[in-house]
Amino acid sequence: MKPIWVVDDDQSIRWVLEKTLARESLACRSFSNSADVLVAMETGSPQVLVSDIRMPGGNTPNAGLEILQAAKAKYPGLPVIIMTAFSDLESAVSAFQGGAFEYLPKPFDVDQAVELIRRAVDESLRESAIEEKMEAAPEILGQAPAMQDVFRAIGRLSQSNVTVLITGESGTGKELVAKALHRHSPRAAHPFIALNTAAIPKELLESELFGHERGAFTGAQSMRRGRFEQAENGTLFLDEIGDMPSELQTRLLRVLSDGHFYRVGGHSPMKANVRVIAATHQNLEDLVRQGMFREDLYHRLNVIRLRLPALHERAEDIPLLARSFLHKSARELGVESKRLSDAAMKLFVTLPFPGNVRQLENLCHWLTVMAPAQVVEVKDLPPEMRGAAPEVARVTSLSRTVTHGDSAARHEGHAVGAGDGSLQSDDVWRMELERMAAHMLALDRHDVMDALTRQFEATLIRMALRHTGGRRIEAAQRLGIGRNTITRKIQDLGLDEVR
Image (cartoon, rainbow, N blue to C red):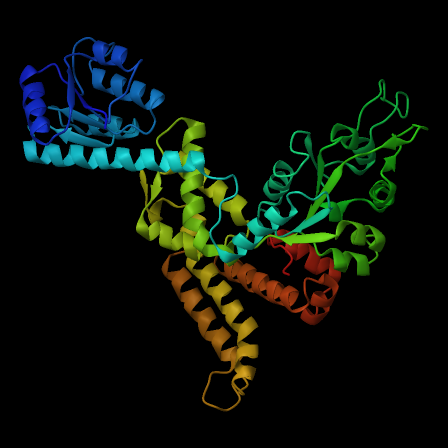
């Protein structure tokens, strides 16, 4: 373990801490001014830094804050304890805003100081262990059985050139899986090229895929290689394949069939040696039935299907993912990694996360920037999550109960509410709605009607889509609304189709 650095212009303070830490078998190195410790920091770092706040030798009277700032810039995870005989509020606020581990006013009890330093040492060792673990961790994290199935599938497909169709809700990590399939394949030494077909304007998508010759259209001043040529001998990942225009579906089918294509405006066939991996959050079978996706292309893409689970299907992975994302955000921002309190972590596990892993990552980044302390409490979460999380979790739980409850009841030989003393299903909904409304009103919210209406509609649409296997038209018919209405509400409510 590295030594504890003590920085104080008072020789008696240094002497007391040196002797006390030596009795505790903690190595110590002392500095009498800020200039010396800043020089030492260029070539090394302590396990914990304990510094006085006011010392000579700095650019400002609060030289300790300069040391704190320099330490956090160079070693974001280093715990820094600030000592001061001027225990005023301004100094405390400055220390904590600068990322201090703790604030120790003078005069202090020696045993109390040692206990604080030991806590800082434990924190430093814990952060070092987490950092080593995160650096060694794979790009895709998951211990849940559903993710283990995904990992096994990646292993089985690693030596194959077969076309793969990755399905799953938005934000589940489809591109990460595609990269893993490429990285573990014989094509790993060659390019991995990704294209989101929904993000490219229809009139430009053909050129993006197949390239164009000079003069092929207005503005084509030079020949341009398309994504198929860029991915030669490697892998081409086509995300959101369900949004590909029908005329381009025909051209893609030909490439998959015989491996040839033409640049836009070109007359010479090009040979493509490319493995295609496609992904979608949509139900392609439904699109085929609606005439919006070619059935022959669907069968060409659907050689091997790999479904990624939604985050609520692998809730046991949320703590692992949250810690990883908090560490990643801290590393990117050059700050100390924050951690979730037990209460905050328990709440995280109950949240539905409709945006899946992407939403969790964005939330962790928000907390890294916005949470005021190193330990994130429930009160530090975004207001919309603090207020709506219990209601969303209850609605999600209730929808699963109603969705799966009928089959469970039939299995036991009973129908829900069939005169056996159980509650009628409409009574369950009414009581749950009353509890939710009472809770939200108690929070003094002023959007109760809108919030409950959105949750009610979202739950009904999710259940209808589950019942119909994701078929929107049939779900709309069951709900008694039009196809355009359900499409608009799915977009407005941020829903994904249920499989």
